[in-house]
Amino acid sequence: MELTVEELEARVGQQIGLSDWVEVDQEMISTFGKLTFDEQFIHMDPERAKAETPFGGTIAHGFLTLSLASKFAIESLPDVKGRTMGINYGFNKIRFLHPVATGKRIRGRFTLDGLTRKGDGQILQEFGLSIEIEGVESPALVAQWLTMTFFEEVAA
Image (tube, rainbow, N blue to C red; front, side, top):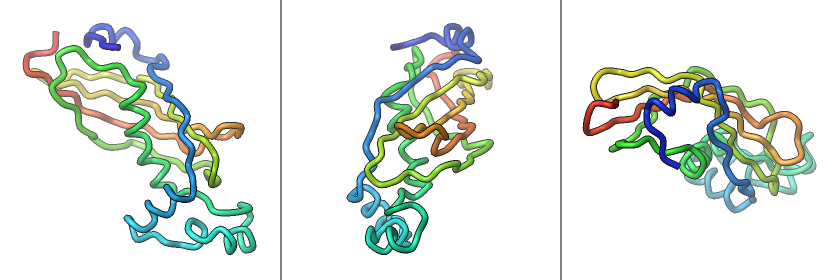
């Protein structure tokens, strides 16, 4: 779906995206651990994690869960008409609320909490992000995510 800036402005305060589910398996967790040098046993060693933690097995890294936000955004957020590129601008808040057990499925739910025109050809969007765990009441994380969208021409 493609929306104009005006159509986006009209949707401030509303849910604007819901991604598909993605399974977080041990291969994904282990690969992430190796790439980020975070090879703590709670992520990498299923037998030890089962024996020594309250989680019953390994869990995903919080930053792995957060990094999947990009996948969720790409597949579920509307494109903005005339956009030439978008960049991460930052986060106002990130809270890791519930561990993601290996084998669980997660998805991203987005609300458009704010949209600010930043001069010619740029808008700053603030998204409320909740990464949900299938079958678990508490989300894995909640965040306020900022993105900057650029246009070749002035956004109308």
